[in-house]
View 1 (tube, rainbow over the protein chains, first blue to last red):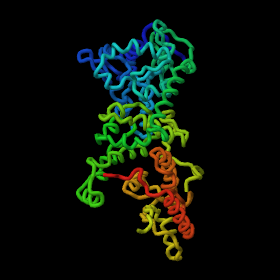
View 2: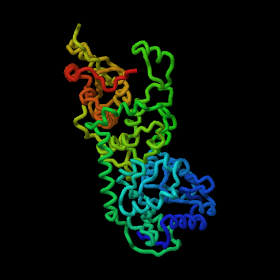
View 3: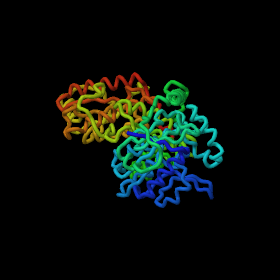
Length: 364
Length: 139
């Protein structure tokens, strides 16, 4: 598998690749982050006309929606689509494909070594362009920008898994060094066949990003310690969730929470008069809306092992519950039982959908 | 005042464990009266949420019992259940529920004696732990 080096910035290089693919008719549509200059807002765009690519900012460290989730229904069309995703978005999409909520068949996935994204709060209150130069300098140095999402600062899976094309953003893509794209699959070779740029045999070298990895792991340890079993965190864990106002925002932005009818929004959780009467006759008081903590416990048992740690949930929480950090920590524990890593391999089955006859002898 | 008695929810599968409980009954075996039995078609039907909900509603412990691995009436229900419980265990630990409060066992229809032993053991384990307070709904 080869690589392409283009003498431009990584962001422009990716935009040019999308332009080439659209103009040559190799793809019908492209999905990428774009910047609306008029309103100065960022969004994820589905683009079919190459002239709209002028506004594309494919590598902007902003996640308005998990692209894996947005891609789900689009991906089952027969159209060829090239999509630029962050590594966690790609992993989330792979998890959805396993749940038959998407298809990789007609997609060309372009992902990149990710430096983390800014929280949505920052996106709406500050000028991202002004933050970018400093952000780039920090991630090229293998350090962690303090103003990114906590899940990003602690994410060790910043190198894309399964991407057709990997673009180098952190580490070697120094100013003036050009944009390096690694073509990981035959599909990628086919699509990029007549694309400009210098070809080389250079292979992606994860060891070059060791500094970033170490920094992230250290940061993760700190985050997990703050919500750990023996620390001050656990005693407050239920109180933390106790702040929940029951908006269900975390589940609606979660790429893994895919159920069309969530159990918690189904008739199972219709609170009718007999429910209130029964409860009140015992306790004499009831917190409204009921079962806000139960909702989180339910989500934890249902899908924690598939959590990719994108951080959307914490970002949209109106009362600042660190949902993502809790999911990331428990998810790692539950996934480890099955040696499972969400989004690693589309052939890997979801742990609770399969079983082995001989396992977990300590249960029962 | 009489001594505190633990309240334990026993979720038993229809084909093995419930029949096991029945056998213990007709054989006039003695076991503590602290369990409240819910009969379900298969241990695979148990959503971990049932367990959470019962702890939240004030049960001091939960016992889930199904057919022995390999003996499921529906062939693989208890294998699936076992995976779900495996996921649940670290989660319970994470939210600070003592591991002994939620117990799993495999009891066949012929094991009336085992049923009585398991219930006795679970009751004693939970009695030692005392009343559950961690998840119980205050309001």
